[in-house]
Amino acid sequence: MPGPTRNYYFISDLHIGGDEALGVCEFEDELVAFLEGLAARVDEDVELVIVGDAFGLWEFTKVDGSEKMDVLADQFPRIFDAFQRAGEKIRITLLPGNHDYELACYPEFIPFLAQYNVHLEQDASITRDLEGSRIWIEHGNQHDAANRMPDYGNPYAQPIGYYITSNMVGGAGQLSDRGRYNWLKDVQSVYPTEDVPHWVWSNYFYKEMSPWLRWILLPFLLLFGLTVFVLIGAGLEAAGVTATNLFLNNRVLESLGIFGNAVQFVLTINAAILMQLLILAIPGYFVLRDMQRAAKRFGLDVSPSELTGQKEEQYLAAARRVFEEDPKVAVFVYGHTHAPSIRYVDGRAVVNTGTWIKQFERVNARWGLLPQVYVPKYCINYFRIREVDGVARIEYVKIDKRPTDELTFVQRLVASRKRKAPPPPIPDCTVL
Image (cartoon, rainbow, N blue to C red; front, side, top):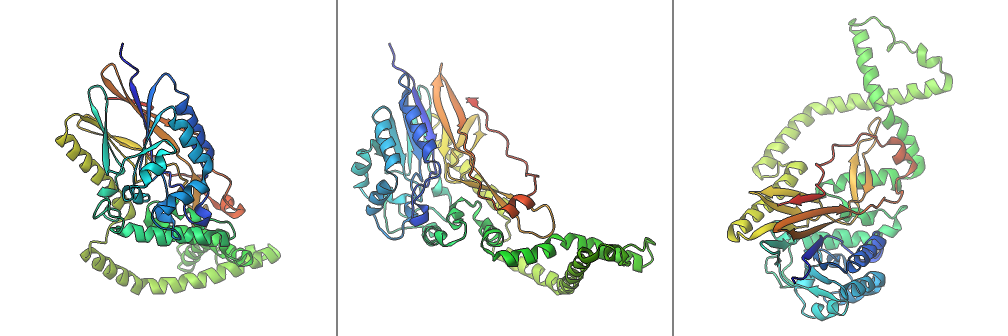
C-alpha cells in the first residue's frame, strides 16, 4: 500500500534578527503556531521549505561569519525551540537567500542548524519531486542585479545590496531606539526601495518633528489647496470673468473674528509662497526637462512602478528557461520581492512566496500638502503544493495578523480612506 502523498509547504523572507532594535520578531507567535500546526499533521508526509531570507544576517554588523547564528539563537530561543520540536515530526529545509547568504558559505552552519532539526541546503536552487512532475525552488536574488552573488559560496564576494543593507538597515537597527516612536527599524519593510526618501520624510514630519513646529506648519499645509482655489477665484473676479465679488471681498472672513483673521493670515502667507513658486517654476521646468534628458542618456529614466515590472519580468524569464531545460518542472517557486503571487507560463505555474515581515501601503493625505502616510499591514501566508490523482495542486493560505496601532493621532486624522486597487486575489487552490 503506497504511503501518504508528500505535502510541500513554502514560506520565505522572514528576515529574523539584526542589530539592536531588529532583534524583535513581530510575528513570532504566528510562526511558532504555524510550526506547531505542521507538526500536528500526523496524517501527512510534510516538508517545510523556507525559500531564503529566513534570517537577517546582513543586518548584523557587530559580529561576523558563523558567530551570527549564535547571536540569532540567543535572540530568538522560542523560535529555535519551535524549529527543533517541529523538526522531530516533519522535515524542515532551509535555502539561503541574499540577506542570509552566509548560510551558503560556512560548512559549520549545517551541523549548527541540524541540532534544531533544520536541514540546510547550501545551493542556489533545489528541486522537489511530485508523482509525475517537479518543483524548482530558489530564492530569486540571482535575477536581481543589485543582489546577485558574483561567486556563489564565497563569503567575501558580496553584491552591492550587501553594503546597502548592512549600512542602511543594520544602521537603522542601531539608531531606531533613539527616535520618538522607534520607527527607523522598519526601513527593511519599505518596498520598492525608491520609496525610502518619501517614507523617511513622512515619519520625520509625523513622528520626529518638534510637536510645536508641526502644529505651526499644519494650518499652512492644510489650507494650501484652499489658497489655490481662492487665488483662482480672485483672479477671475479681477479679470471681470465673474461678478461674484466673493474672493476679493474680505468681509466674509472679517465676520468670523479672530478665527477669520487667522485664516486670512495663513492664506496670505500661502499666496506669497505660491507666487514665488510660480515664478521659480518657469526656469525650473526647463531645468527639469534637461535633467530628464540627461537621465535618459544614462538609462535612469525609469519610474519605480516600471522598475518593479521589469524585475518581475526577469523572474518569468528565468522560469521559462527552467521550463525549457526541464520539461518535468511544473512549478517555479521563488521569493525575494515580498509580493506573493501565482502567474502562469505555458500552462505551468510561477509562485512568489511573499514575505512575513511588515509591509506599508502609501496613502495620500486627505487635505492640503501634507506628506503621505505609510499605513502598516501584514500579508503572512504560505503555499502548499501536492499531487492529487496525478494533478499538481497549489493551495494558498493567509494567516490573519493585524498590525499594532503605530499611527499617530495626526496620521490617523489625515490619512485618506481611499486605497489603491489591490492586486488580483490569489486563488485558494490552483490545479495544473
